[in-house]
Amino acid sequence: MSRRPAFHPPSGNLSHIQFKFLMPVSSPFITRSGRVSAHCARDRSARFYDPVQVERIYYLEVELLLKQATGAEKIVGFDYQIRNRQLFSRGETKAGDYVLVVHNDFTATSGPRRVRDHLPPAEANERLQHRFAEINVWRVIRGPVESTPLAVRDARSIDLVDFVPTDFVNREKVGEVYRLAYNPKHRWFYFPGLEYNEVILLKCYDSSKDGGARFSAHSAFDDATSPSDAPTRESIECGRWSSGRPIVENVSPHHPDKGLHHGTR
Image 1: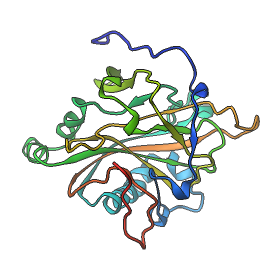
Image 2 (image 1 turned 90 degrees about the vertical axis):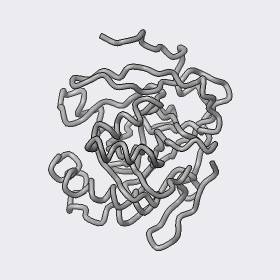
Image 3 (image 1 turned 60 degrees about the vertical axis):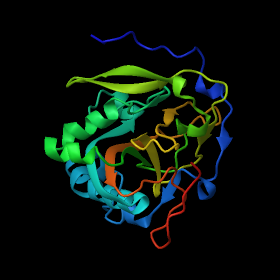
Protein backbone atom coordinates (compact mmCIF):
# COMPACT_ATOMS: atom_id res chain seq x y z
CA MET A 1 0.00 0.00 0.00
CA SER A 2 1.26 3.46 -0.87
CA ARG A 3 2.37 5.66 2.01
CA ARG A 4 0.54 8.66 0.60
CA PRO A 5 -2.31 9.42 -1.79
CA ALA A 6 -1.53 8.99 -5.45
CA PHE A 7 -0.86 12.19 -7.31
CA HIS A 8 -3.18 12.81 -10.26
CA PRO A 9 -1.95 15.48 -12.68
CA PRO A 10 -4.47 17.86 -14.26
CA SER A 11 -6.61 16.34 -16.98
CA GLY A 12 -5.35 16.83 -20.48
CA ASN A 13 -2.85 15.40 -22.91
CA LEU A 14 0.73 16.35 -23.55
CA SER A 15 -0.15 16.79 -27.20
CA HIS A 16 -2.02 19.96 -26.16
CA ILE A 17 1.21 21.54 -24.98
CA GLN A 18 3.16 23.56 -27.51
CA PHE A 19 6.60 22.01 -28.00
CA LYS A 20 9.62 23.79 -29.33
CA PHE A 21 11.50 21.85 -32.00
CA LEU A 22 15.24 21.51 -31.52
CA MET A 23 17.50 20.12 -34.18
CA PRO A 24 19.94 17.61 -32.64
CA VAL A 25 22.96 19.54 -33.90
CA SER A 26 21.99 22.60 -31.83
CA SER A 27 20.46 20.88 -28.82
CA PRO A 28 21.91 21.64 -25.36
CA PHE A 29 20.68 18.27 -24.10
CA ILE A 30 22.07 15.79 -26.65
CA THR A 31 25.47 14.21 -26.92
CA ARG A 32 26.80 12.43 -29.98
CA SER A 33 29.63 10.00 -29.50
CA GLY A 34 30.95 7.24 -31.74
CA ARG A 35 32.37 5.56 -28.65
CA VAL A 36 28.91 4.78 -27.35
CA SER A 37 28.35 2.22 -30.07
CA ALA A 38 31.96 1.21 -30.69
CA HIS A 39 31.36 -2.38 -29.56
CA CYS A 40 28.07 -3.01 -31.34
CA ALA A 41 27.28 -6.53 -32.46
CA ARG A 42 26.38 -7.02 -36.12
CA ASP A 43 22.68 -6.81 -35.22
CA ARG A 44 23.11 -3.93 -32.85
CA SER A 45 19.45 -3.83 -31.81
CA ALA A 46 19.33 -7.48 -30.75
CA ARG A 47 22.02 -7.09 -28.12
CA PHE A 48 19.94 -4.69 -26.08
CA TYR A 49 17.40 -7.45 -25.47
CA ASP A 50 20.12 -9.71 -24.07
CA PRO A 51 20.77 -8.89 -20.37
CA VAL A 52 24.23 -10.46 -20.53
CA GLN A 53 25.34 -8.21 -23.41
CA VAL A 54 23.80 -5.14 -21.79
CA GLU A 55 25.65 -5.71 -18.53
CA ARG A 56 28.95 -6.80 -20.07
CA ILE A 57 29.18 -4.42 -23.02
CA TYR A 58 26.70 -1.57 -22.88
CA TYR A 59 27.27 -0.79 -19.19
CA LEU A 60 30.95 -0.19 -19.96
CA GLU A 61 30.09 2.04 -22.92
CA VAL A 62 27.77 4.13 -20.74
CA GLU A 63 30.44 4.47 -18.06
CA LEU A 64 33.00 5.69 -20.60
CA LEU A 65 30.50 8.12 -22.11
CA LEU A 66 29.58 9.65 -18.76
CA LYS A 67 33.17 10.01 -17.63
CA GLN A 68 33.92 11.79 -20.88
CA ALA A 69 30.82 13.99 -20.76
CA THR A 70 30.85 14.92 -17.06
CA GLY A 71 34.45 14.56 -15.92
CA ALA A 72 33.27 12.40 -13.01
CA GLU A 73 35.82 10.21 -11.25
CA LYS A 74 33.44 7.34 -10.44
CA ILE A 75 30.37 6.03 -12.27
CA VAL A 76 28.07 3.44 -10.68
CA GLY A 77 25.28 1.71 -12.60
CA PHE A 78 22.21 0.38 -10.84
CA ASP A 79 19.54 -0.57 -13.37
CA TYR A 80 18.24 -0.33 -16.91
CA GLN A 81 14.87 -0.51 -18.66
CA ILE A 82 13.90 -1.39 -22.22
CA ARG A 83 10.84 0.42 -23.63
CA ASN A 84 8.89 -1.31 -26.40
CA ARG A 85 5.09 -1.11 -26.33
CA GLN A 86 4.65 -3.92 -28.83
CA LEU A 87 6.59 -6.41 -26.69
CA PHE A 88 4.97 -5.10 -23.51
CA SER A 89 1.46 -5.61 -24.94
CA ARG A 90 2.37 -9.23 -25.65
CA GLY A 91 3.26 -9.74 -22.01
CA GLU A 92 7.00 -10.09 -22.53
CA THR A 93 8.90 -9.24 -19.35
CA LYS A 94 12.01 -7.94 -21.13
CA ALA A 95 10.33 -4.64 -22.08
CA GLY A 96 8.18 -2.03 -20.37
CA ASP A 97 5.55 0.37 -21.67
CA TYR A 98 6.17 4.07 -22.26
CA VAL A 99 5.67 6.38 -19.28
CA LEU A 100 3.09 8.97 -20.34
CA VAL A 101 3.33 10.88 -17.06
CA VAL A 102 5.56 13.87 -16.41
CA HIS A 103 8.07 12.84 -13.76
CA ASN A 104 11.63 12.96 -12.50
CA ASP A 105 13.39 9.76 -11.47
CA PHE A 106 14.71 11.00 -8.11
CA THR A 107 13.81 13.36 -5.29
CA ALA A 108 15.81 15.20 -2.64
CA THR A 109 15.25 12.13 -0.46
CA SER A 110 15.73 9.24 -2.89
CA GLY A 111 18.82 10.69 -4.57
CA PRO A 112 21.18 10.23 -1.59
CA ARG A 113 19.39 7.00 -0.67
CA ARG A 114 20.41 5.47 -3.99
CA VAL A 115 24.09 6.03 -3.17
CA ARG A 116 23.68 4.16 0.13
CA ASP A 117 21.86 1.35 -1.68
CA HIS A 118 24.83 0.57 -3.91
CA LEU A 119 27.97 1.28 -1.91
CA PRO A 120 29.47 -0.03 1.35
CA PRO A 121 28.50 2.27 4.27
CA ALA A 122 31.94 3.81 4.72
CA GLU A 123 32.36 4.64 1.03
CA ALA A 124 28.79 5.91 0.76
CA ASN A 125 29.35 8.29 3.68
CA GLU A 126 32.51 9.59 2.04
CA ARG A 127 30.90 10.02 -1.39
CA LEU A 128 27.95 11.87 0.08
CA GLN A 129 30.32 14.54 1.38
CA HIS A 130 31.11 15.53 -2.21
CA ARG A 131 29.13 16.48 -5.27
CA PHE A 132 27.34 13.66 -7.05
CA ALA A 133 24.57 13.36 -9.59
CA GLU A 134 22.12 10.77 -10.85
CA ILE A 135 21.81 10.64 -14.63
CA ASN A 136 19.39 8.74 -16.84
CA VAL A 137 21.19 7.75 -20.06
CA TRP A 138 18.40 7.51 -22.65
CA ARG A 139 18.97 6.24 -26.16
CA VAL A 140 17.20 4.73 -29.13
CA ILE A 141 17.67 1.04 -29.91
CA ARG A 142 16.46 1.31 -33.50
CA GLY A 143 16.26 4.76 -35.10
CA PRO A 144 14.92 7.05 -36.16
CA VAL A 145 12.19 7.58 -33.55
CA GLU A 146 8.92 8.19 -35.39
CA SER A 147 6.37 7.58 -32.61
CA THR A 148 5.94 8.30 -28.90
CA PRO A 149 9.13 10.36 -28.52
CA LEU A 150 10.57 11.65 -25.26
CA ALA A 151 9.82 15.21 -24.19
CA VAL A 152 12.09 17.11 -21.80
CA ARG A 153 11.03 20.06 -19.70
CA ASP A 154 13.41 23.01 -19.52
CA ALA A 155 14.60 23.03 -15.89
CA ARG A 156 14.80 26.82 -15.94
CA SER A 157 11.01 26.97 -16.33
CA ILE A 158 10.26 24.76 -13.29
CA ASP A 159 9.56 26.11 -9.80
CA LEU A 160 10.43 23.95 -6.80
CA VAL A 161 6.78 23.89 -5.75
CA ASP A 162 5.98 22.10 -9.03
CA PHE A 163 7.74 18.94 -7.81
CA VAL A 164 5.37 16.57 -6.00
CA PRO A 165 7.01 13.68 -4.05
CA THR A 166 5.26 10.45 -5.05
CA ASP A 167 5.68 6.83 -4.01
CA PHE A 168 7.13 4.57 -6.66
CA VAL A 169 5.98 1.06 -5.80
CA ASN A 170 7.59 -2.04 -7.28
CA ARG A 171 7.99 -5.64 -6.20
CA GLU A 172 11.17 -5.15 -4.21
CA LYS A 173 10.59 -1.88 -2.39
CA VAL A 174 8.85 1.47 -2.30
CA GLY A 175 10.94 4.28 -3.77
CA GLU A 176 10.20 7.93 -4.35
CA VAL A 177 10.02 10.01 -7.53
CA TYR A 178 8.76 13.46 -8.40
CA ARG A 179 5.66 14.03 -10.43
CA LEU A 180 5.07 17.52 -11.72
CA ALA A 181 2.17 19.86 -11.12
CA TYR A 182 1.00 21.89 -14.09
CA ASN A 183 2.51 25.34 -14.48
CA PRO A 184 1.84 27.52 -17.56
CA LYS A 185 5.46 28.73 -17.43
CA HIS A 186 6.80 25.31 -18.34
CA ARG A 187 8.73 25.03 -21.59
CA TRP A 188 9.14 21.74 -23.42
CA PHE A 189 11.58 20.33 -25.93
CA TYR A 190 11.75 17.13 -27.91
CA PHE A 191 13.99 15.70 -30.57
CA PRO A 192 12.35 14.66 -33.86
CA GLY A 193 13.79 11.63 -35.59
CA LEU A 194 16.28 10.77 -32.86
CA GLU A 195 18.85 8.32 -34.25
CA TYR A 196 20.65 5.31 -32.82
CA ASN A 197 23.94 7.18 -32.27
CA GLU A 198 22.31 10.00 -30.30
CA VAL A 199 22.02 9.90 -26.53
CA ILE A 200 20.01 12.08 -24.15
CA LEU A 201 21.53 12.62 -20.70
CA LEU A 202 18.82 13.47 -18.19
CA LYS A 203 20.20 14.92 -14.98
CA CYS A 204 17.63 13.68 -12.48
CA TYR A 205 19.44 14.69 -9.30
CA ASP A 206 22.37 16.94 -8.44
CA SER A 207 23.60 17.35 -4.88
CA SER A 208 25.10 20.76 -5.64
CA LYS A 209 23.13 23.74 -4.33
CA ASP A 210 25.11 26.42 -6.18
CA GLY A 211 22.08 27.80 -8.01
CA GLY A 212 22.06 25.46 -11.00
CA ALA A 213 19.25 23.06 -11.82
CA ARG A 214 19.18 20.12 -9.39
CA PHE A 215 16.26 18.24 -10.98
CA SER A 216 14.59 17.92 -14.37
CA ALA A 217 11.41 16.38 -15.79
CA HIS A 218 10.51 14.25 -18.79
CA SER A 219 7.74 12.16 -20.29
CA ALA A 220 6.88 10.18 -23.37
CA PHE A 221 4.02 11.65 -25.40
CA ASP A 222 1.83 10.75 -28.36
CA ASP A 223 3.01 12.90 -31.25
CA ALA A 224 0.10 13.97 -33.44
CA THR A 225 2.49 14.41 -36.39
CA SER A 226 3.66 10.77 -36.35
CA PRO A 227 2.80 8.77 -39.52
CA SER A 228 -0.05 6.30 -39.05
CA ASP A 229 2.31 3.44 -39.93
CA ALA A 230 5.21 4.65 -37.75
CA PRO A 231 7.15 1.77 -36.17
CA THR A 232 7.00 1.16 -32.44
CA ARG A 233 9.61 3.15 -30.55
CA GLU A 234 12.38 1.00 -29.06
CA SER A 235 14.62 2.60 -26.45
CA ILE A 236 16.79 1.82 -23.44
CA GLU A 237 17.42 3.92 -20.36
CA CYS A 238 20.21 3.29 -17.87
CA GLY A 239 20.31 4.71 -14.34
CA ARG A 240 23.75 5.90 -13.25
CA TRP A 241 25.15 8.09 -10.53
CA SER A 242 28.43 9.89 -10.90
CA SER A 243 30.75 11.31 -8.29
CA GLY A 244 33.99 13.24 -8.18
CA ARG A 245 34.86 16.19 -10.36
CA PRO A 246 32.28 18.78 -11.50
CA ILE A 247 29.26 17.59 -13.44
CA VAL A 248 27.88 19.61 -16.36
CA GLU A 249 24.59 21.42 -15.95
CA ASN A 250 23.34 20.67 -19.47
CA VAL A 251 25.21 18.60 -22.02
CA SER A 252 25.63 20.13 -25.45
CA PRO A 253 26.64 18.34 -28.65
CA HIS A 254 29.71 16.34 -27.74
CA HIS A 255 32.18 14.60 -30.01
CA PRO A 256 34.96 12.35 -28.70
CA ASP A 257 37.63 14.28 -30.60
CA LYS A 258 36.60 17.70 -29.27
CA GLY A 259 36.28 19.34 -25.90
CA LEU A 260 33.05 19.47 -23.94
CA HIS A 261 30.85 22.49 -24.47
CA HIS A 262 28.79 23.49 -21.46
CA GLY A 263 25.18 24.46 -21.85
CA THR A 264 23.43 27.17 -19.89
CA ARG A 265 22.55 26.52 -16.32
